[in-house]
Length: 145
Image 1: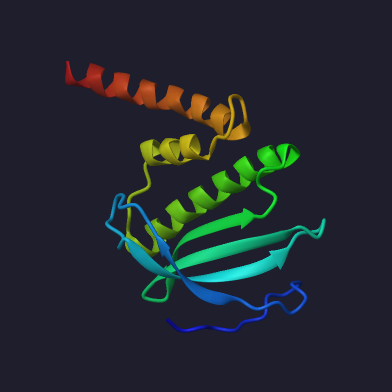
Image 2: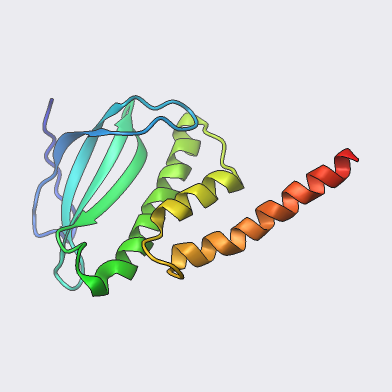
């Protein structure tokens, strides 16, 4: 395993380091283990965040973010929103660099996995988008008849 050293703008000169991360197989098959670069950065409230970018052939295919404060109750909605963003960005990266198809079903699946509690933003988005999924299924069934 190698180590890269890159400054992150606005990060007080903290460095990144390469690490290994596992990944479930989904859609286009990704390996169980991918190389990743981990960045340590701070938000405007000076909370420390860790952002990991998984790579294949030098291209980003997934992105994850976490903080040491993820058990803090008032951060739960921020974390579910962050999880939603990183899951959807990862889906887009796999489309761009691996040609994985973007579908409504995959989007809904990632939103469901992002939800941390009933009626949080990912749960609300899931509910709305599922109605489109049902409508599309009904349309397809009606066209077959």
